[in-house]
Image (cartoon, helix red, strand yellow):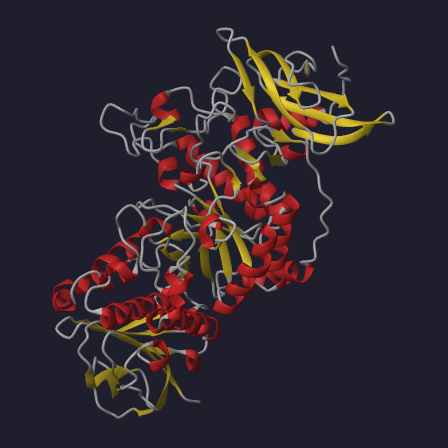
Length: 636
C-alpha cells in the first residue's frame, strides 16, 4: 500500500462552521491542494463522505487501484476524509473510490471541489492550481458604480459553444480566442455586461450546461481555468461586467457526480417528493442540511472571489421556492404550516444573498423567478429574498404575445402592452429576451413577427425600442441583436452571414443605437426601478394602437418623451400632451433609413403650443412613422 501522510487543513473552528452550515470558504479546505509537507512535494485531499467506511484516492499515479491510497477519517464526526499523498502534482488525474456503510455500495466519484475536470466525455478530476495575475484593478475600483441599480445595465446572454465556431475546424472558440472575438464584439455593440450560460463543468452538451457535475471548475471544453480568468480580465479591461448562470436548484444523476455520493442521499434530499425533479430528471439539493448549504454558498462566493465575477443569475428560483413546483396533487407534501413554500430553501436563498452582498457589496444576484412570489428583490431585513434583480417574465410573455399578433388586431389587446406598468415597480425587474424564448418550437424573436419582410423587421426594431425605454434593466440572447432567422441550435454557430443583408444589419445598428441611448440618457436608468422614473402620457389610444409615456431622470432636463406606433399605418400630425412648454428634439427614431426603415418621418424641430391635451396644458404634434418608436427630449 502506498504512503498517505496524516495531514489536515481544517481547524476545530473550520469543523464547527462546516457542521453549522456557516463555513462559506470551503474551497480553501476541501478538494485537492498541492503543497510541500516536511520538504516533500505532493497533494492534500479532503472529501466529505460521512456514509463511507473506506475512501481512497485513485488516479493515473496509482493505476486507478482501489485501496492503494487510503484517506483517514476525522475523529470529530464531521464525515471528512483527508490525507497528504507525496509526489502527486498539478495535472494528475484522480477520483474518490468510496465504500459505503450503506448496503455495501461502492461509488467512484469526481471531486466535488475540483478546480479542473477532464474534457467530456472523460470524467476524472484534475489536480490543479494557477497563479494568474489579475490586471482588472481599475474595473474593480469602479465596479460599484457600473454595477449599481441606478446605472445602465444591458446584458448580452451568451452560450459559449454556439456563439461562433471555427467552421473549418468544426469547433467552438476557446477562452483565449473569445477574449479577442467576443470581447471586441460586445464592446462594439455597447452592452454593459455579458452573461454566460453555465460554464461550470457539465457532461452532457444538450443540457446547455444546466446539469452540472463540476461546480468549482470552468468547463474544459474551451481551455484551462486560468484562460477563463484571462477572458474575464479582458472583458473587465473593456469595462464589461461578467455574470454567470448559477444552478443551485438541481444536479444530474451521472455516476461520477454528486448523486448518492457516498452511497447515501448526501447532497440530495432523501424524500423523492423533495429530492427529485420530474421535469429535468435530476436531483434536488437538500437545503435543510447545513453542510449542503455551506457547499452551495461557498460555491457562489468562489466564483465571485477567485474569478472576479460581477454577478450571479440564479437559475430556476421558482422550482426552489415551491414544494409543489411541477407536481400534481399527491406528489408533494405541505410544510409545517400546511403551505406549498419550501421553508428551508427560502432560508437558504436569504442566507445566500446576505452573505454574497456582505462579502461583495458591489455585485448583483439576479433571480430567474416566474411566479408572483413577493419581495424577491427586496432586502432580507425587509422580508424579501435579498436578490438585486428579478427577471420580468410577465413582461416577456405579454410583449411577445402582443407583437406576434397581426397589427390589425392589436387594438383589441392594448392591455397586453400596457399591463406590465401596473406592477413594474414591485420588484427590481430585468426585461429578458433569453435563450428560453428561441427554442422548442417557439421560433426566433424575428420569426414571431407578423407581416411581410419589411414589416417583420420594423416590428422587431419597434419591439427593441419599446424594451429599451420600458423601466428595468435589459437582457438579450445572442443572435437576437441581428435578427437571427432560425431557432437557436446549441450545436451550430450563429448565422453571422445574415449580416451581409441590409435588414439584419439594420437590426444590429438599432441595438447599437439603443445601447448608446440607454447608456447616455440618465432618464432611462437613474430611476429604472421606482415609480418616479415613469409617467404615462396616454395608454388608452387602442384604436390607433399608440402608447406614449415619459421616462424621468433625477433632473427634469433629462426627461424623455417616448411614443410607440404599433401599427404599419403612419400617424401624421399625431398630438400628444406634454408637461411643459418648450422645444423638443428627436433623439431616436427606429424608422431611420440606416436601420432599414422608411426614413420618411423624421421630426426635426418640435415646438409645444398652449393646447390642452391628455389632461395637460401643453401639447404638440409629431409625425409617427409606421411600426416605430420615437424618443424626444426638450432642448436646453
